[in-house]
Length: 119
Image 1 (cartoon, rainbow, N blue to C red):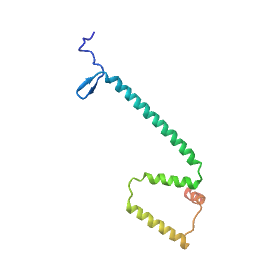
Image 2: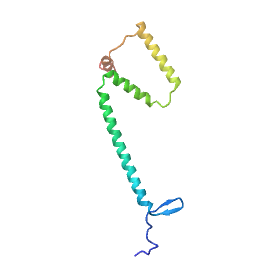
Image 3: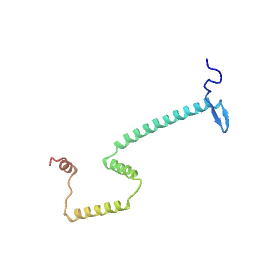
């Protein structure tokens, strides 16, 4: 049998420089409650996201596209002004081509067929 000194000490917490064995159970309880709360928050957030997604999928295509665009824009943490300027110039160039009749728009179904290589 182990002597009293050789036994493992009970879980203790310190309060400043003072050892407080009475705090250990309270600390474990608070930690368990914090974990329970975090799990509840995570579950609630997942449920909310699922409900939002269901509602968003019921919207007309134009509204879904607007939401998708806003979500994608929110992922851009930094804006590269050179890239933005290049895209703006490209958009203006393509609009000019459409407006002058140098190019004509293609329906999405046909474009998808061309991209897939069957057209």
